[in-house]
Image (cartoon, rainbow, N blue to C red):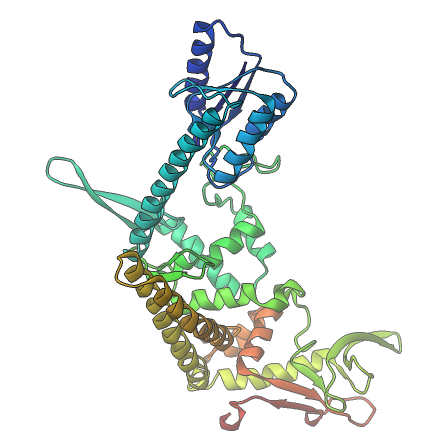
Length: 492
């Protein structure tokens, strides 16, 4: 005989559920004088969503090989929840003339039409039970999202506080800021906004011994590498995921990436301003980031800011030796039309930018340029998401038909995507908060202390264009050979 056991959820990996099924199956076999040839187990594995079940696959292989003459299960629902798998399994058992004997339920002779029909009928009820449960769970999850509550444990940066009545009965819960962890989230966000690399952020956290999120948790399927056996060390992926997390800005996303995705205000307090989170997402999600490493930039004007004043080609850096001394130059990458000493050009740009940032009104133009467009796009996107979510709620309550719901989604979805694109485009490379750190009377010292990646981001925020113009050969540096322009330069 072949014995099969399965349980859908076993987060702790105790296997007590499948052990109980195996014990009952062995007892049934012993009572009937049957010998169990092999046992097959799928622990913590759902059969509804079509997830791969190695134990079930091995069972079918054993049936085909005629290893056993009968399959024993605790209930038919342990074998099948998925309609397609059930149909394929019934056909395989029919060809093998292999009956199914549940511990709880009628025996099914798969060689007869009646037995196969009963297997299909019982299986359909099993599937319906799972789907109805799934609908209840989905509705409860939607309600939690509408209320802004977390779908599970409190996230990294918060701690859950339970509320009780006078008799000690739990009446509710709320997530409050966990300051030590929240400080790490804010630090990561700030460092991303300063264009630091994920590698440098990760290395810094690990060097200080800051435990990674979930370091002490244990999951059955969570693999631990040899270099990180207890999960305490950060990785580039964990740093990036944390910075991208919408919860940081006090947002609760429901059905992320689906056509009915909705964003709600979270019930927990935000850890960073929404504008900072949006800037961090824009920085980490920029298409150019997959090709370049902005945080590791070594030269200020190459590829994007600086241009050849003759052919408008990009600038690159080249080393030229003159009288035994090496000189680093910005040169035209396309044709070599122009070349200029990198250090002197960068020093000239620094004086121009510092003079602007030291002005009392330096940030006014930048704020108006960014905030109005971002606020308008954000409001449009939020309003369209609310429309789609409201239509989905009305459909769930029976107040709106499916065709009407589909029309709302068809009309709103393209406009929502366009608004999100405008929002992403309106986000500057450096937010006002980071620019404010570089502005004011101490602008020169702040500029000197900033890494090249942050300086470059400031130029991008200003919309600056630097052109290297042809000049006479010979020693010395002519400031007039470097043309600097940006949209706000007229008032500078």
